[in-house]
Length: 291
Image (cartoon, rainbow, N blue to C red; front, top):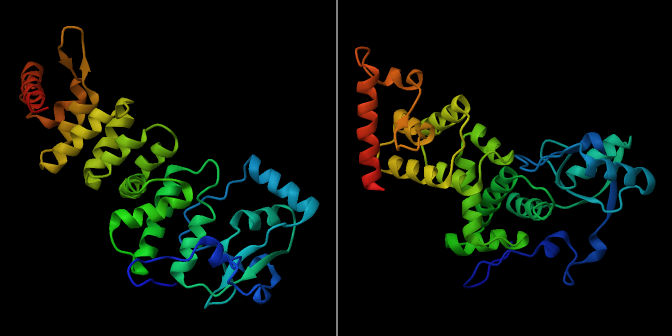
């Protein structure tokens, strides 16, 4: 990929696909490749789902064939790696086709990543996890090409989807979540910003959060996630602190109660319920003063 004297400028999506005015169109040849020789892109972040949209794709392929050829590159181990066209290949399989029309290009790894991401990122109904890993892959590819400055590079990464550099960086943070928590984001059980804040917790701390959410059937608010992030940064986040932040029940009187069976294992066996409540009360009062 080309570099300018001052700024790194990656070729546009159209240039890489070979549809720019300066590209030799005569070199393009569409060929039919057996589906068995078409392999998915390494670490492809986008799911291929057999949903209603796929049914429409299959019906179109049955009636008209594949209108837009896929884009592939040769593999050293044989066959071809799909750069763009994973859904079309699946549609061909479901439609009973044995081959698919493709353009074969000899892209570098980084060029292929950029095209793969940009050809999928504007699709409807993309999951947060898909966008997160796609943005991370594209960011790494652009850095390999010499792009400097995280902010500027992030702006370039999100350009095709209309996302700001800040939004891109937040999406990339989601890749640091435990898979179980990231699945909650995809399912709409956890909002985006709280999830971003939780991504700064260690994996063990995240496991405490997930455990508490499941066992106590609670959700994480922005305030809760921010509090846990600050505690983690200060080295003061414990499993008990997670319980206190997520599982406390505030009554009209202002009294805080937590089921004894959820906290008793944090205290010596000889502690009475009243003693445990007193310790918790003092911890909460200390937390409130600091926040």
